[in-house]
Length: 552
Image 1 (cartoon, rainbow, N blue to C red):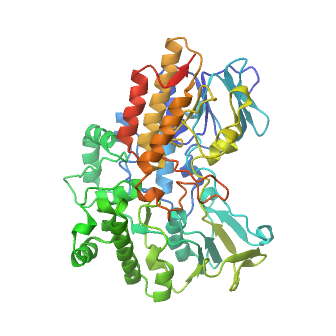
Image 2 (cartoon, helix red, strand yellow):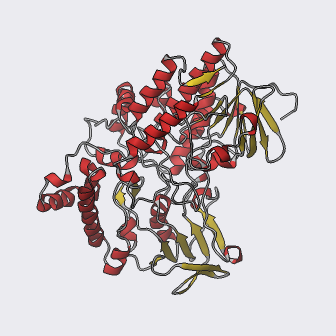
């Protein structure tokens, strides 16, 4: 961009759904905005995560924006739970419909975000040296946008193709006749493994930690159901606002089993009202599971808060795995044993366990035979060599804080965000940090974020930020940042509401806590108190003219 370009009111980093909606909402507020995006087009998570089997774990008709009734009516979803290509098409449709790309600079990665005290503006510097400056900056960089790749000896020596599920190429990957290895059985791995097994000559799955995974709804969208949602979207949006996970649980009258509260609960991590598991006899529990499937375990309230109920549910789950996997030893290796249901974001799958009944699939337990090194021809464990043509890392992300820290953010008086967060992320409402005036984060740590329907969370955050900036301009204020006390009180509250849940159980080592990143401080990052409770707190700040903030 030319050096003489006009300074916008707001600069945004990231053109995923958050950055896209920020353009629309800020324009509507009369503000000028510019977005800088590392990718070559819009879509964020759904632009980068193109691996086989990538799919949303929120029902399609709920994983959609509510800001435009026209958009709601004109878009059709082909499946109850959408695959990545369909979600990316939705993102592109939004960009086209609202002419968003004219305010986006693509193929540009930001390497530094610096607050300029003298002018009370933020300067963003790209890797190629270009800069942008604005009074307000919004980091819409996503919660799962920095792929994590373990440092393994010999990784650079492998002569085959190396891929990561979080940075999958746009062009097709031909695995026919190939020996493929995949490291990781988290959500991405669980989704990819069945598809990879169908394509590859042989698939070797390297598993460190077994996962709890439930069958996803695999139905095609019915026209009558989709129309009923469209006819009732105002009610559905209202129900979303009242639900802890931002999902309406709307039940269409024109069809049954199109999506269920069980699946929605699995998605968001919030429990449905299915009674208590311990109120049933062992026979009743097994009968319920036999009738409704393993996903029924997610509907019981006490599974998430009562250690005894959680232990019972875990045992029932392991029984189910042994019914699904033919080889007893493989089944046993696939059974989680050292943490409980609800510790991690629930994974949904299509044919995951059935895949291990295939002749061309091998499971390697890395707890029994750890990786020693990557070799030129494959991967070596303590038990021997595995010859591979393709090595895939499904090893997750530096979640929630990774993208923010990698942006090298420096606030007032040279304060480094990396120093402020040395012992874990500190924010107020997941929206701002003390010492970083006029810098906002979307679905940041300390907000419901990944425990919520992300599009509902994004709309709420961007609306709050747009209202805040508009108020500041109308009242002739220059800067806003949280009070120290507000940050301290909020962090204490975030941790208090997480206590007593499976999320913070001693055996739980999840990316919610940063436990998947060596050396990362162990602190519970999302807000588990529920979306309505969180939104009420944000609304109270707006109504009080931002009493919890220092406004100058």
